[in-house]
Amino acid sequence: MNTLVILFADSKSEHIFDKCFNSLSAFDRSLLWAKKTCAEHKADFVLFCNNSIADKAREAINQAEIDSQILGLDNWTLQDLFSNMSLEAQKKNAKSIIFAYADQPLLNSELTDKIISDHIEYNAEYTFADGYLNGMSPEMLDAETAGILSKLAEIKEMGKTRVTRDSVFEFIKLDINSFEIETVIGEKDYKLFRINLNAESKSNLLCCQELLSKNIEKDSALEICEKASQELNCIKTVPSYYNIQISGKNNLKSIYEPASQSVFNGSFIDHTNFISLIDKIADFSRKAVVSLSLWGEALEHPDLISFVDAILSHPGLSVLIETDGQKVTEVLAQKINEICSKYPERTNGYEKILWIVKIDSATKEMYQKINGLDYGYDKAVLADEVLSKYFEGSVYPQFTRINENEDELETFYRYWSNPQSPSKGKVIIQKYSTFCGVLPDKKPADLSPLVRNVCWHLRRDLNVLADGRVPLCREVLDKKIIGNAFTQDLNEIWKESDTEVKSQIKNNYSEHCGKCDEYYTFNF
Image 1 (cartoon, rainbow, N blue to C red):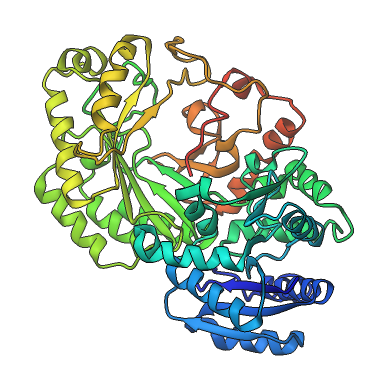
Image 2: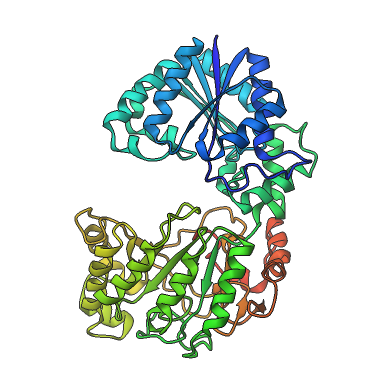
């Protein structure tokens, strides 16, 4: 069977050419996989890439001594991808296409061979692996299928969107019953660990480096997945979410928040300390979402607009603001929108700014019962409408489920999840937390998994109070401080939670963590 191997080199992959693996880059290692696959399956090889990195790609291909054509475009849409897949397959007289991103240093030959054999045996039109870590396997599709997808991309709105790692599968899903699909399924679902083996971000690159330092070259795909799932430096790399308290002031006294705690001290974060902290965050994580709403109303801070500007000046950082909506105005929304318009799209894959408006009810009466403010409901709803006008698709009305408001959940969800609502259907249903037993249990339902996982928040979040103190996590409030972000190196602070994560890998939990059920919830 004539086969075409296509690698896609995306300029948005930040570390694709970094020589991090014994003088090889992720791109170099992907080329070695492609060279081996072509040799074993008598396939041809073509590289698709952005024009901005074509010269670097050509140099690496020459050094790898692999025969290849390079097709470069400034920007790749799905329509570009499928049409060029089909065209190149016709040129090579190929009946099938093996496709993968070119920044994946752990593409696995065992999985590749299994995908190819199943694709042929079951006469599939599209074959992929599921349950393994992201970045270990390619996708395979018939050349004729690529042609069909090309024609569909001409008429489907999604065909105009840029290529992403899951674009092929997501596009096929639009009409999934029309294709013969085969899946190579792993014995265990390792995708639950959200480990991505690519060089797109610092976090992912560190994971790849850690795995390749463990002499895994001869391990099976399953063994590699298992090692990664048990390795501290794979499941915990650098924070992807920073939750910063810029204001200790609050307009509401919500019954689901521990307002009596000392973290609510009414103070503002210092401007100079904040700007310095954002620079440290950008240097440490490179790509992350920065929330300005830890234990206080962010819109109360007089320097809020300056803070948004400082965050967005780093292309890998996005802003999240969770607000009660009481201080939202047209003027404020306009000013922040103007700040956003100055900067390019984010390299972290998120919007420049995300808004969460805490509404929590479907009636004024319930809002007053929960938040102690009889006029706040109308302002919160209006805030969502105002923000949605300037930040369409990036505003989320939020409902925190507690016993008191459970009867209004369905009404709230039906209204806000409707695409005709001000938020265009965007909505968040938030779970209630007892903060490790500080608050009484008000959960109307227990949604925790049967098997406990290592806490997502310890693995991905870093919280900073207004005075720079860093608690172990949001749920311990200020009861367990592990450092100060204004005076210490972030990496030094980040490692302070390693001991707890190692213990949780072995199903052992500290006093605070043992009382907490936020471990399965996920931010970014």
